[in-house]
Amino acid sequence: MDKIKIKGGANLFGSINIPGSKNAALPVMVSSLLSKENLNLHNLPKLQDMNSMISLLRSFGVSVNQNNHTLTLNSQNLKNSTASYDLVRKMRASILVLGPLLSRFREAKISLPGGCAIGTRPIDIHLDGLSKLGVDFEIDNGFVKGRVKGKLTGTTITLTFPSVGATENIMMAAAQADGISIINNAAQEPEIIDLAVCLNKMGAKISGAGSNSIKIVGVNDFYQADHSIMTDRIVAGTYTIAAVMLNKEFTVKNINSNHLNSLIETLKSMGANLKIDESSITILPSNKIYGTNIETAPYPGFPTDLQAQVMALMSLAEGTSQITEKIFENRFMHVSELNRLGANIKIKNDTAYIEGGRKFKGAQVMASDLRASVSLVLAALCAEGETQVNRVYHLDRGYEKIEETLGKCGPSIIREK
Image 1: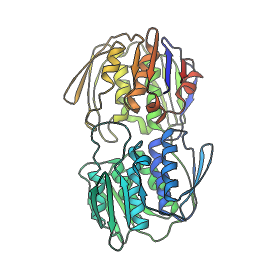
Image 2: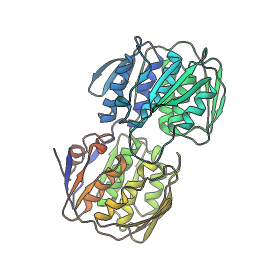
Image 3: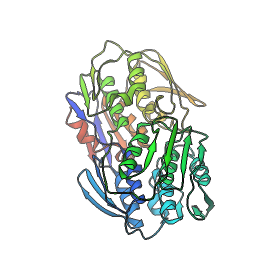
Image 4: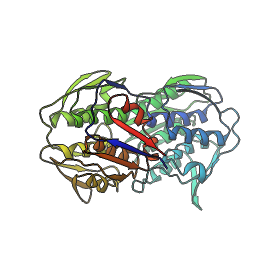
């Protein structure tokens, strides 16, 4: 099992170009199940989750042609609508195939998915929404089984929570349903917009993506389409936080800075010196970083996927900070490992209390999930001595060869088997 070793006191210089977004790419790849024509995708990140999704799509009969960061998918000859546990256990996003498969086959059987071990992450919102389109579900022996009598039928669906995955699943299922569907209390994340843009290129009629109410007019046919995946706002935010922690001049390029407004506001409130352009953020040395209080929330609020990273920063800041986690339960698993590196963080219910002014010291730590693992990397960059991060397969699910990406910009990061 791979591990990475990081020498602390790192220098950081130059810039990083941010790759395509994992969270945007996965649902867009799944949308190929709706079409019998080619879907040509560009700017895909090279991540383990991409490989897992390709394997899953191939199991249904999707033709896959991959060339570097470009992918061509063709679902003309789909052969089944069953996804086994072996294929979905590594990736929570596998539940996204449910809606498109039901649209194509009128039935689907999907093993309950895996992925990061963060709380329960219930799929009830997905099933409730799809049920309103005319799907009958049962859960049996670890599988979700869905069946449609006739054809999916458009309706108005109000989500109990603005779930990103449920919004995507319902949006894809409704794209070829009879009539008009409305999703109220929809997720507003930029990744929702990216999926809607791709679906519309394929022939869908979707409006309102990015707002809390999305309208989908069902169509009969999809066509060949080309789509470039949006860049990864979470990776961009991660490297921005790293530069603030190291207090170095550094530029994060190839982004949409509007997608990071909540992070930018938080960092500025802490004293960070940032120069913001539409497609880049330049981090400049600052005199001092201060603690603050934040609460995670659905977009445009502070993203839960940057919570662990900013917690590492708060441990270095002057004063105390609080983070209240409102999206996922049990998303403080990184706290014990940050404390091993010298942080002083206490948890009470859904809030973390962070004592600032700490100094990290190298140690062996273990990653528990994707974003937790990268928070340990950020802390290690600032630590005295060497840190070894174990179980970095979590890291590989969301960060493309982080040891090479950061290594080109100064830090000493070595991967070992």
